[in-house]
Image (cartoon, rainbow, N blue to C red; front, side):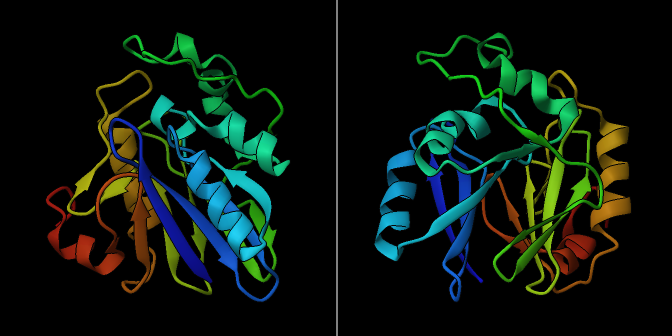
Length: 209
């Protein structure tokens, strides 16, 4: 597995291109604003087939380029149904006005807790981790020990809970029951900031240590 990340948009959101080098199959995880050109250049250079676009949640900074990427790759979009309202009508759920338009995505596949998405030799397990949003999910590739956590868990922090759909008790329960039970060596790739590990967060995250 190879992980290529791009940090883009006004709030430095990270999207991931995760590929199986043998089959040249790939997935995109989250779609930050103005990330399409970079994703396209890597996809073209490596001659990849993007088989899925996975969304950890639907805050505008994670879905801004989803429509463009879906059109470019023809890949199906996967999201939890509890977060679909922002994807279906993004400009009504931005909290504050944006100086650009986000196109709606209406053709999606709904995924739920412990669903699995197979791409080449990679298999991503869906973990339902609400709290940052109503339908927040993480994607775990167990063979590689990789957790794509969106804005649920950060290095020594957690996702904010002061936006619509957020809840401190819910996010803490999500992380405790779904992420902190994973092995210490699993690497966490978040939607903002540096990567970390489950073991590091178990010891150093002030919300859990």
